[in-house]
Image (tube, rainbow, N blue to C red):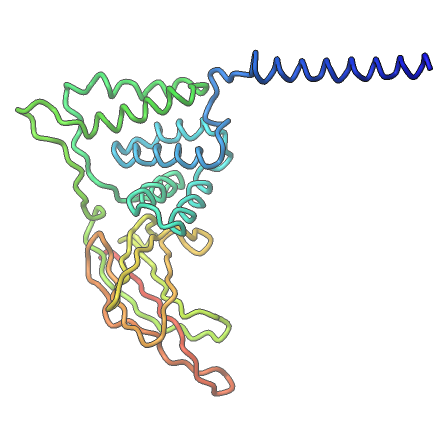
Length: 288
């Protein structure tokens, strides 16, 4: 009896101590994270952080600053992470501008030349705001709150209206450096292994290097779709594709200008046994 009573007393004491510990840890003195960095963010908030970094890069073109900010996320390969995020954003139907910014930053990290909107430099009245982002380059342990404030300050500096005597800075979309893209190739793809009628698009510059981050508009009688090059780097940095449907005529153009491709439709093909099927089309755009 005495031993049983002692065991119960110990059990009650342990449970009581455990309960008191939970109350103290959860209610009286909960854990507070201080100076937590972006690397501790949940995945969805890391995506938001990358979008902010890509937007800042689109505004100022400072790749070193963007790279320093991405280091704060503690990822091994930022370019691959950004490419994967751009694919997810495209599938989710998010803003085309945000997708393009993310794709272009990924391409820039890979050493590819990309086009981006030209931004008028901030006026002297905003100089105090522009100095802040340099802290990111010097402090790898910068907190999440400070990093977000710095990025927001930079975006504000590039878009805030100056004094009335100074013209308002604007973001003007301009073509890629060099001549506009021209349609230089249209090939029929007959491959019975392919289960989809694929419209393949390849964009290359004047040095015959594929160009990522180019927005392409594919339109037909009842609608249109936007795709971007560089979202499938395993195929090519300047590659994009789209699944066509039968009895539909498409028009393909690059947002950055150049000659479009018209009356694109699924071509007739024949397999080795003589059975007909619909194939795909490969379009190549190049700067002269």
